[in-house]
Length: 243
Image (cartoon, rainbow, N blue to C red):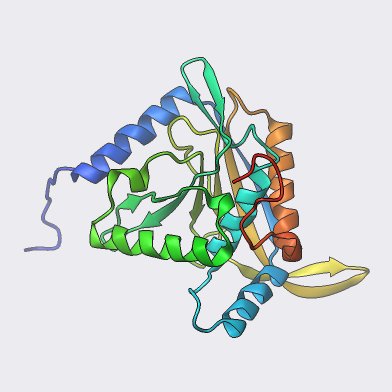
């Protein structure tokens, strides 16, 4: 076939459903995105240390560690772990985090890590890896993609991506987008040093989340990323509500 030949193809069912949900979300929500950048040097060092100390364990990625930090932060920012239906806001006690995943054919699915705050880092990584494999194989079940109370989308697989304006999943309060980790000069105590930085983009629905609470949540996520010794890598049972 000539490369300039025009073709018309129908949207696959999965893409059609995603298109309907995204379009409805944009019609009904009032999306605002705030952008930030955080020093990820210590978090990346933690990832490398976990890999070295536990070679037989699951391969823990930057996304897994950020999801763990997000789950911990959501425990103290209930307004971001919320959904809106008509005129009722539900502040969820459980933390169920959707992880946006691009498939080899270019389509997008969002498997859900249920009770992400109640899983230790190994269990969280194992569950995420298993869900990703099911997604690629086309074997996700309906419960695997339902019930998210917050979503994380990592566009940083492509080095040119810095900040995005992620679309909030229908009904959810917010979504956190991650950009590509990159080296950049940073001023520290009067000296300029090179650090690995992680860009972030938090889109939230201004109908029921205001700018200050959203910024405070993002600031706490940044603090956990910059100081990962504060991330509770075990199951988060230290605070109410208990798991």
